[in-house]
Amino acid sequence: MPTPSMEDYIEIIYNLIETKGYARVSDIAEALEVHPSSVTKMVQKLDKDEYLNYEKYRGFILTEKGKKVGEKLVFRHELLENFLEIIGVEEGNIYNDVEGIEHHLSWNSIDRLGDLVKYFKEDKSRVTALRKIQKENK
Image 1 (cartoon, rainbow, N blue to C red):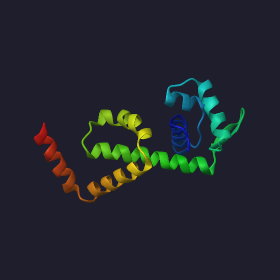
Image 2: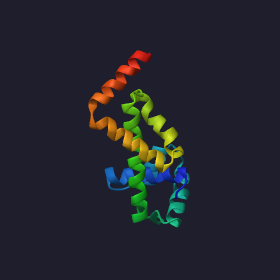
Image 3: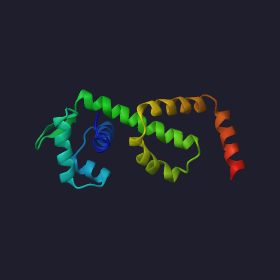
Image 4: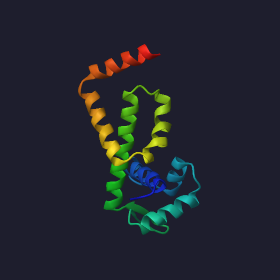
């Protein structure tokens, strides 16, 4: 399994390829707020660990292994955003909160949160009831 730092890179690369059709070192550096040289080092490591295929001066593509991990990481990120939205976290806090917790939860915890998100989405009255409780507790 990739390290949390590797996960961040794979997730960004996956998202860039899905939205733009490609991922450049400069795009990754900008998204992660790191130096391009740091991106190059990580891309080389991801190549070594077979998450992507990298050719110097040519670019890179995700391997099947990298794509599967990328899909899983995007799913986790979106699930956590949905969960925080459902429980009433202020929109302006959601992204940073997800970034802060996503690497610290087991996949078992993610699965259980998925069950909870599904439970609330199946019946909107459940979200309404939760909002009522939150309003009473203010």
